[in-house]
Structure formats: structure tokens, C-alpha cells
Amino acid sequence: MSGLEDYRRKRDPERTPEPVPAADDALPRGGDDTFVIQEHHARRLHWDVRLERGGVLASWAVPRGLPATPGDIRLAVHTEDHPMEYATFEGDIPKGEYGAGRMTIWDRGRYETLKWSDREVAVVLHGQRVQGRYVFFRSTRTNDGDRDWMVRRSDPPTDPDWQPLPESMTPMLATPGPLPKDDVHWAYEFKWDGVRALAIVDGGRVQLIARSGHDITTAYPELRALGEQLGSTQVLLDGEIVAMREGRPSFAALQNRMHVANAAQARRLAEQLPVTYLIFDVLHLEGRSTLGLPYAQRRELLESLELDGPRWQTTPSFPAEGALVLQAATEQRLEGVVAKRATSRYHPGRRSPDWVKVTTEHTVEVVIGGWRPGNGRRAGLVGSLLLGVPADEGDGLRYVGQVGTGFTEEMLRTTTAMLADRPRKTSPFVTPVPADRARGARWVEPELVGEVVFREWTPDGRMRLPSWRGLRPDKSPDDLEEKL
View (cartoon, one colour):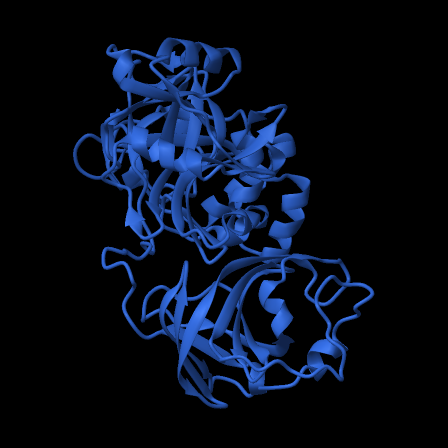
């Protein structure tokens, strides 16, 4: 682990601001106790850990940064030795050069050597941001030679109250209702027409979890850069993924992105129809759960993160202005507002009266119980869907009507294919379906949830003038808000 031949070979001092000492320069002799960690925004964000050894900086590139707990073992790619002058380097390495990108000093200080061999390096770091015992060790998983290393922490976190990020969580939900009367105790946010998603950010990497608990990270590659903005900040965010059309969120447009599992296809769609992540809550931050904090304090923490990027932003919150916010939502043809009690904590997985959603139009989440084939250009495709909601008692669906409008061509193809995989011989509805609707119907297992907008409820509990908005793969029949 010595010598700068590889370092010089990879760099041209005429093209990069990095220090490049001459080959005949004598190596400095220090105390083998200096370390520096540099945050490196290269092709992929990583942290370069450099330890002074024999007049050079022995170096490892750690993609997710040093682990905070002993059980978290992370990749640490052993790279070429760097000159001692690199311990103070910050700057932009030009595009086209080795390691191109912005580099800043993330931490530095002194370290103690516990062990140093060709297969294992154990040290105690004493920095401003990192303190503790770390072991870099050769992995035996592959035959990748000197580059195949890992790193682990071998002592508990410095902060005894430090809590790891949860691996998953179910978001808090709102109850439908009118604007609260005690306006001064509430804050108001716009209700966005998209897909709820939690963002787990650790080591500059983002993982997106849908309300159903499914990992949807692959479907939205344009949100990956959120992790790079947050850098080493460890956080769990709550928000809504939306697709914009004519300046407003469009659930119909989002349908084209929601069912994508192929990474290459997702990248193509991200260029054609990019999404935006609208962030409205923070649930865990830097080793601390924020679930027990009041909404107003969580908002302060969220706003302190200054999350405003090309494909993500912190949504506004308006204290004590319910009527004005609802009026603005109506004028902008948004779905409505969500009122949040300023003193309320976050209740994962619960539908709480501390959050109230007030809609500007009638929408309902429904379960597909059957479909009728179309004619003409819809031959072989869905002509209309027979819809229901879970019955008040027992199994089965209560029939609430059919819908045949609001479909795009892509929706028709996707929905028909999904229904064809779920046939059943009998109706899943426990209430009568009108004979003219049941005639020629193809019944399906009641597994697919969708969303419908409509004019009003009829006296017999049917939707008047419904229009299809799209499938909700993020929800299951058990998630439906109301049993009508």
C-alpha cells in the first residue's frame, strides 16, 4: 500500500486541479495518524476515506459512507494511494478526467492504528463528525484482488440514543370531512393527485416504498438524485409522487409510470414523462425518530433540509388559512386540501382525525368486480367496469355502478390484461347488479383497486356520471376508506 505511480498515471497536472507531486519528490514522513474523509460527487456519490501511511494517503472509496452501527457492513473499494497534499484538497475535477466531479472535505482529524496488514486495517478515528473504531478488511466473496474490501464499525455508536433508520413504515392516513372549525389550531396543505411514497435516504441512496409496502425505486430513476443532494444525511421522508400535465398533477399521466418494473424502460419514461416528488413530512432524521414530535415541529425540521431540486420539492404548509387554501385548490382544479392539527404526532398506518382531507370533487376508491367487453375500437378490450366497495358486513362487494369513460388507450390495454388474469365464475357482488349490466359480464376476483371521479351519489347508493381515473396498484381492497 505505498507509492504514487498509479496516482500520477491517472492524472494530468495540466488538466486537473488535484495535487500531482513530481516523481522525484521525497515522500513526507509524518506520524501515520492523519485522516481525511472527502465527499466525492463523481459519477456516483461516495466518500473517500484516506489514512496517512508511510508518507502517502492509503485510500478507500465507500459508496454509502462509513456505517454507524456494528451490524452494518459496507463496501469499501480500495483505490490508489494519494499524496499527502490531497488531505487538504477541495475542488471540481473536470469532466473527462479520472474521478470527475465535485470534491469537498467532509471530515478530518487524527486516528490510532490498532492493526495494519495487507488484509485488515483497524483504526480508531477522532474527527469532528466521526469518532469510533472501524475495520477495513479484504472480502472473500470474489477474486477481485486488492480492490475487494469491506468496512464495519466495531464499537457502538458514539451517541447512546442513536436509532437506526426503520427498514419500512406504513404512512399515516387522513379521514374525509369538512374544514375544521377551530382554524387556528390547524395547518393546511394541498391534496396532490399522485402515489404516496416514503423515501428512505441513507448514504446518498434513495429507496422508495409505496403505501402497499412494495419497493418502487426502480420505477422512478429521476428521483435518485435526491439522495445526492442530501449527501450523508440519514432521513425518512413522506410525500407524494405526481406527474404534471398542463401545470397540474395528472393521475391519468402517472398511470404510464406506475406499473414499470424494467429499469431500462423506466429510464426512457423518465425522460418522456418525468415525475416530481412532493415532500410534506419527515419521520426520522439523523438517528432520531420524529414520529412523536408535533406536526408543527416536524415541518420546521423538514424545511431546514431545504429540499428543492429538479424533480422534488417541499410542499407549502399554510397555518390557519383553511378557507383560502381550499378556494385556491378549487380555482387551480386541484383535488382538495389536507388539514393537519398542529399539535398532532405521526401515527404510522392509522387513519387519524388529526388529518382531515377536504376534496373539491367527489372521488372514491373502488374494487373491480367484473367487466363488460367493448365494441368497435374497443373490441377485445374493456368496454366498462363493474365496481363496488367492501360490504358493510361479511365478505363480498357492494355494487356502486359501472364506468366506461375516462380511459386512455394504454389504460384499456393494461386493465384488460390484468383482468384476464383474474377470472371467476360467479359475481363477487353481494348486492344486486342490474340485469342489463350483468348480461355478458365477465366476473373477476375482487383484487384490483381503482379510483373514480363522479357528480354525486344517487339515493340507491350508485355513482352518477362516473369517470375512470386509473388503477391504484399502491392499494388493496382492505385499504379502502369507506364502506358505503
